[in-house]
Length: 190
Image: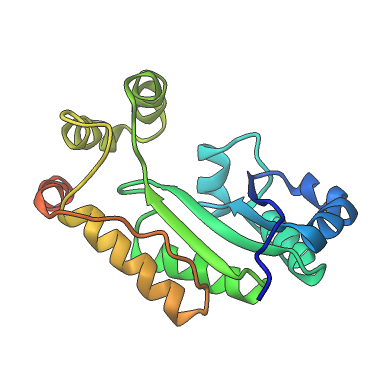
């Protein structure tokens, strides 16, 4: 068997304008391994508008996924970041995974929010304004590290793996996890 000699690359976007490049993406995929990752963190239109006021609505992004898949482009959904207390419920993630599969997505990636200090400086004022009931919890969750670990992250990762399998969205995006912060998260949210 001959070795693959092309490039292996991916594009991550929230923009539905990517469908303008179907011809180019099709040509590239003849010689290279092309993957398109469409970011969508919720199907709740009102929540999406608050979180990403300038991004296309989630259903428009799913329509773009459908067009890309129909054109033979390897395309999937990137549920990143998954926001504790906002977009992390089983129902929310399952609804998104089911819609992704129905629109032709081939994989699902999910990752819990990480907050580097520069991002924290921007995100916390937004959170305090838009979701003040969560601000204290986020300060507690992210006080020691920009990355969540522990039981909370483990449970979210397991859920993403389960949904990936249930809806045929094969992708391997898991990472090692521990249990400590889930207990803190559960206590903070009751």
